[in-house]
Amino acid sequence: MTYDLIIIGAGPAGISAAVYAVRQRLNMLIISKDIGGQVAKKAVDIENYPGFDKISGSELVELYQKQLKANNLLVQQDEVLGIQKKDGIFFVSTKSKKVYESISVIITSGAESKLINVPGEEEFSGKGVSYCSLCDGPIFKDKIVAVVGGGNNGFESALFLSNYVKKIFILEFSDKVKADQENQDLVFKNKNIEVITNAKVVKIEGKVFVNSITYEDLKNNKEITLEVNGVFVEIGYTPSTLFVGDLVDLNEKGEIVFDPENLKTKTPGLFSAGDCNVSKYKQIVMASGEGAKAALSAYEYIKRNK
Ligand SMILES: Cc1cc2nc3c(=O)[nH]c(=O)nc-3n(C[C@H](O)[C@H](O)[C@H](O)COP(=O)(O)OP(=O)(O)OC[C@H]3O[C@@H](n4cnc5c(N)ncnc54)[C@H](O)[C@@H]3O)c2cc1C
Image: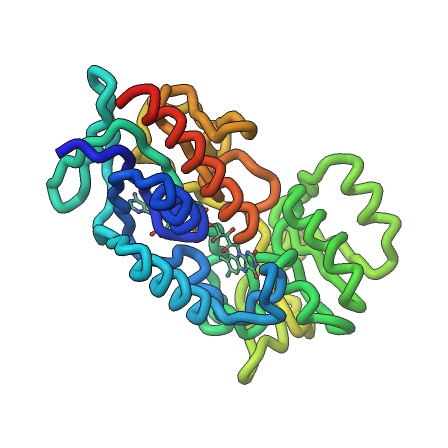
């Protein structure tokens, strides 16, 4: 059987693509490792999604599931390992050794935040440890926080957080920060932000919530503990794009290069949306928007190629 469309991933981008595709009466298959993607991992409430003052990750995932069911959409729980295109047809192979065929494919496989892998990181995730300052910054109003990472991610997070928190420590492992000069200028003139280089994070501690972060001062070989209420890990993302092969171009971070107008990749019929794409901001509302756009573009393609 050849589907009109295969959607890979069932996070916000994939769900949104599916909801739009079903309205175009496309015969589709959704293949995903889970439902909800990063939203399912969200431990504190989402406060920046239109229509909701607050909603927890698990509540939003439940609503996704209800919407899929209402549209008779099933998610094939599996992991995609490869995609090939031959004679105008895509062949999507999975871990369970199945191969599915379709006229068009939308990749919405998302990304995962890089971890620092220190004691306390997992234990306090959602209890003071966050991977998204844009999402969780306002929760730390008037508190003291550490931002781990002295690149653009870390510096831009610190600048955003400075609108809310009273003190920010940026901890950078190497002896120099890597942020652009423009970000450095803004950070270094902000009195509430202190940049500490040669700082290797050793552990995060607390009771119910985070109350300190300890780093090794690599210059003086001693451990220093800072009392903080929150730790923002801002050392980048790993996009889930390894399985795509050479059907798409990837940037240096492994994100998919796409046309923002129509979500096309370099391969006709192959679209991509959400956090797996090259993008500065990674948010639910943006991934959802791209998913919708990709489905409408895929529909146009399928109409012409069926
Ligand atoms: C802790 C945390 C808190 C956040 N808080 C907020 C917030 O408050 N507000 C906000 O707007 N954003 C928030 N974000 C960001 C937001 O969750 C993401 O931007 C959004 O989930 C991206 O959606 P996506 O569908 O592109 O990717 P993802 O959510 O990453 O979903 C990707 C999907 O693809 C599947 N997948 C991956 N690889 C494969 C494969 N090979 N085969 C099959 N399936 C695959 C995954 O299982 C998953 O279902 C947060 C992120 C994190 C990690």
